Length: 201
Ligand code: ADP
Image 1 (tube, rainbow, N blue to C red):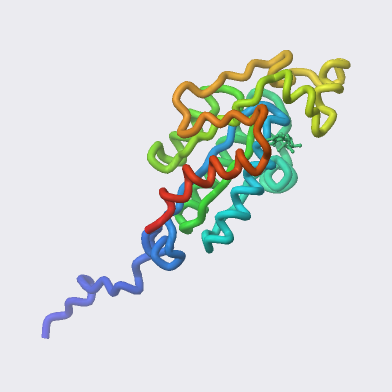
Image 2: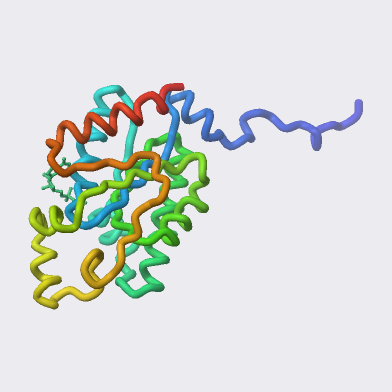
């Protein structure tokens, strides 16, 4: 009998694909990328969105400065080069989650078109949902959740986005989310309504 062992490719040798993970989880995976000034509401909205999605049995992972800068990117600072590398690694990690079928929710100021384009290229255009948390500078400064605006005004923080470093608004975001004059819950509802239909298999 002819030995055909070289031609045998049992299915169990195949690495499970994203669609297999999505089928297991009964959800579509996607990367939701919140961009906006410090204090615009990225983290607050992401946390609310995650809670709502989890109620619908959708598996999610938030990536933000807290879990990224203290972990995988703890050797990076805020130079131009390090900021670029920071985003590159975040995008690569997001892609791994994407391939695991998980909805990744990213909260990073990511102030320039170039930086967000780079993330989009790595993740893939069709899987990258950009949400612009569109809160005016004055409102963010008034909120000053982390006291950063005060420090930046006092000259204790250099290159602060919106003050002495630019923020380039997205030109064509998936969602242009205005938060001024809205409650947190109203804003979260707006995002959930837009995202949820995309996630069903
Ligand atoms: P970021 O993550 O963008 O730096 P945070 O989420 O940490 O911003 O802070 C946003 C602040 O603004 C929170 O204190 C939040 O309660 C407040 N806030 C007021 N209105 C809204 C809204 N409609 N949506 C989101 N946050 C809001």
